[in-house]
Length: 415
Ligand SMILES: *[C@@H]1O[C@H](CO)[C@@H](O)[C@H](O)[C@H]1NC(C)=O
Ligand SMILES: *[C@@H]1O[C@H](CO)[C@@H](O)[C@H](O)[C@H]1NC(C)=O
Ligand SMILES: *[C@@H]1O[C@H](CO)[C@@H](O)[C@H](O)[C@H]1NC(C)=O
Ligand SMILES: *[C@@H]1O[C@H](CO)[C@@H](O)[C@H](O)[C@H]1NC(C)=O
Ligand SMILES: *[C@@H]1O[C@H](CO)[C@@H](O)[C@H](O)[C@H]1NC(C)=O
Ligand SMILES: *[C@@H]1O[C@H](CO)[C@@H](O)[C@H](O)[C@H]1NC(C)=O
Figure 1 (cartoon, protein in one colour):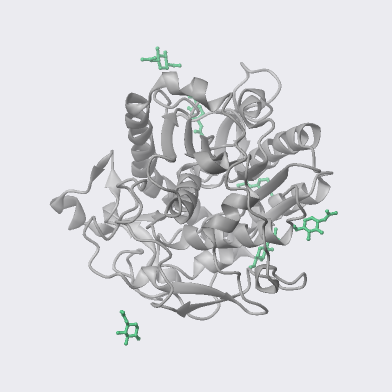
Figure 2 (cartoon, protein in one colour):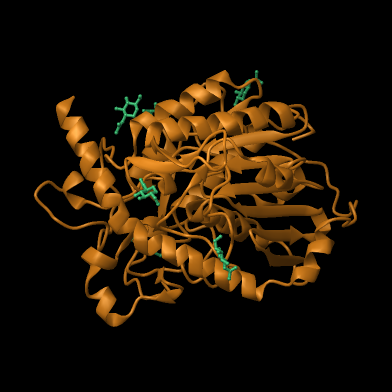
């Protein structure tokens, strides 16, 4: 018990080191996004025609349905350079530079060739046409931080190859990104809300990174943008893990106090849960919650005696492994809150499967402050490797394959 406590302390004091750079990076990204955005496009978001084209019957085979009893989150990574990756950096024009590790100079490409194999069943083969048909006339929205943004980008890449030029578009409408598949009237969106609830880090271009303050009981401003979305996928973790305490308000918006991190997280998720229960119609909307995306900041956790991080790792971890960066206390809070909900929210428990992938982070092949790392920075991976974000193609593709499996599993005509 004492040992765990001291490990916890160590993590919480180390997180800032890794985060400071990444959060700044996130800021710059959004600044760029904002500059490139075309505000006139926002009107196109509303009032687009519900097209009837490409309306084919959806044929699901037995292989498309994961069995009720199968826990798809338990399994192992198997080498599969025949069917993976599901797309390439070259084939997907929508990937941002932050995730294209190979193009950015990563020498090995093994990380793209692993397939997640659940113990008790097979995942259905990802079929973009099937997904587009299921989502016809609907909006799928990912809500969260920059880890969640990568899942959004992965989903765009997974479906875009089957859509002809001119019939697809990606627009930036900060704090949103919106991908449209015209012929299917499908909209795949991303909404920046690093704490899910409101905070002073919500503004796309002008938010304080270090002096963060969270409004634990406020969600209405974001919620307005989520109302009526057919499939919502939420995620929020790493922004909370800055210090053991976090500045927040609850009740009076002027009374900023330091909250114990776990207390704050619980209060925020309760606010979210109330929103879900009052705004979601379970008959025609579906809600998913992503468990925490693990980090690989300390190599001594999987390689005792070493003193590095995820840099230059080229293979998944074999055998049981759970890094101390993935807080079980937070996991328990998520579990409790989801249990108490009236609406059925599906937990996508991707933490364990991602824990194995110490090899799959952007490391020194991502960006910092909106630019690829310099030669000097690359020569100092201990300081500059990003062991929070993931390369694409990569691990977030697997999260989406599982999301796809759930959408197929629960497909009864409405979704
Ligand atoms: C796929 O992996 C196998 C086993 O490692 C290897 O022998 C083969 O050359 C690889 N094929 C390609 C196309 O990379
Ligand atoms: C950024 O936000 C701060 C605090 O909310 C405000 O004082 C400042 O005027 C803002 N700057 C810009 C350029 O909007
Ligand atoms: C909370 O805000 C105060 C005042 O700005 C600051 O001194 C303190 O360090 C902050 N606490 C945390 C945990 O960030
Ligand atoms: C935060 O609060 C919880 C519940 O009250 C407690 O178990 C935990 O030890 C606290 N953590 C810190 C760092 O104070
Ligand atoms: C998610 O899975 C991990 C192990 O894979 C387990 O420890 C944890 O309790 C699960 N979380 C929830 C909320 O069920
Ligand atoms: C809730 O969702 C899960 C996972 O999709 C499903 O297995 C379960 O049957 C649903 N429960 C209800 C009451 O709808």
